[in-house]
Image (cartoon, rainbow, N blue to C red):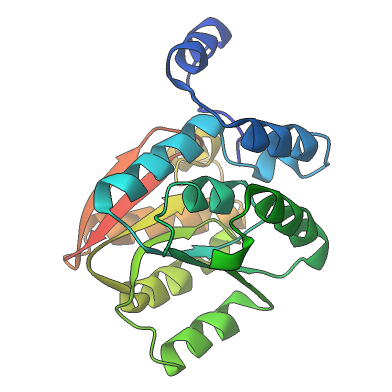
Length: 220
């Protein structure tokens, strides 16, 4: 997990922010509030949020699915990029963290287009499939427990339309994916996930070194 792009020294990272980041004040405020939490590293980097919002605009996305909400930064970044008739479905287990998210969504005036589902993500994903929402999302973002990535991705492949885009966070995992001595469960899970996607003929693929590694998988 990382709340800034890895592999950049401080002067170069500051240059990147100074010459690229156009973060709305409300997003900056949410990021600052999240920064004081013990779990602050779960927050995506602002440059990643801006990149994801640009992708949503380039696609003309209207429906966005998110697995892992935390305090709501990524959902808000995308909500601000969607058209007025856009819709977000976001999944999380924490009522505490998502209460912060909901307060910022309300302040931004986008709460009416965000549907938060609290509970186990696999149950929520199965429910979306059972209620006829397969092939209806333009864009999905997976940023939850790493050992669940494979299952979440398979659900997203059914829920995202052909030509839609699935984004997967933390796929460089602090660089430890390239360390053969790192045998932690999360590291091994991400390594296996990356290997599987590399050979998956159902998608077009790019792993981008922004944030902690962001995989882009376009459903063919």
